[in-house]
Length: 288
Ligand code: ATR
Image (cartoon, rainbow, N blue to C red):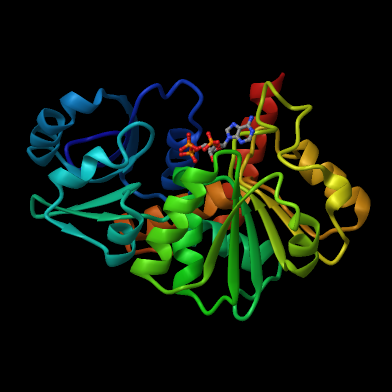
């Protein structure tokens, strides 16, 4: 039951038709008996400022931000977490006494799922990231903050990989190397890799018959992670499994970035296992 005491959170993005976030969080609040409610709000970039003025007058304690607003939101913040500042994008905001503080939980959410599901410790390991867009930026920056050994960033467009690597090497430390997906040394580099991560949309519904790399290049010593979670098992994950690679699917990152946002807003620990069950159910329902 919503009443005058209900604490509000929201997702600001456009379009939001396919988002699972409000259902995942509302089921959580209900399960835990918390008087919170999560609203999906479709908002254009140019309207965010006015929306925030209104939110500050209401019972909002925070919100998530998604495409196309993750960069735009920064100008409205009073404070930004140092990692989100380096990433240059914010996906979670906490409102305290009318002041907005921005965070980015995407990279940490990904690493949480890698550690819990893939049993991977980041320290001293080598990562091969496919893609150089927003998701890659959050994951690569967050990894670079840990004690990883090396990150290769392979992208269709070399310029974008160059820019991202330069930014990480300058802002955090010199640990990344850019390359294209056609690089002549790609096989050798994949052989040295502990974890290969797809951060592109290749393989996402409806293009479910595509993989971002030729999977014959994989060895079973490489853990393969995909951030795509619809379908829950992408062609990349399916083929990597058949080769014998340990795999980490995209649902984990989605749930863990949400769990970290939940913890920022409520100060309570998120029930990860229950969150996973509800998201898996939602994906199955969507596919029927
Ligand atoms: P996001 O914020 O979700 O990461 P993005 O910033 O648009 O989205 O980045 C998408 C990434 O997927 C980019 O690395 C893009 O490669 P380009 O920089 O060359 O555009 C990559 N990508 C998208 N479709 C692709 C495809 N069909 N093959 C290879 N890479 C693709």
